[in-house]
Length: 141
Image (cartoon, rainbow, N blue to C red; front, side, top):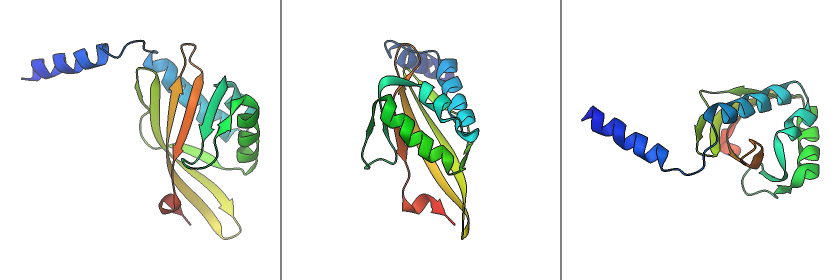
């Protein structure tokens, strides 16, 4: 049975069509965290394709294109927030998902937000779509 299961998993993974190597997607996520934590909004923005979109969090107005994305990350990084991955990046075909925590300071003390982001990538390894999943239930003070 384990051999059949391994074959089934391999067949599923191989039928995904055009794929980006997992290590490229994982590196993009790691660079996203690194640049964000260093306050390098330009470095974060460089990870995105020209016509990329960012929806953070889901249900809020979408940031369209690098100019809007740059302004969003400029504001976000100026808050002094720090990101920490919570487990491995999950990557398949041309997409990655990752859980992380955002920690920042407020006059009332530390604030932590638990988030799951998804990235979709183009053939060059640039992020074409970012969606952030978090809500009030994920904010801890």
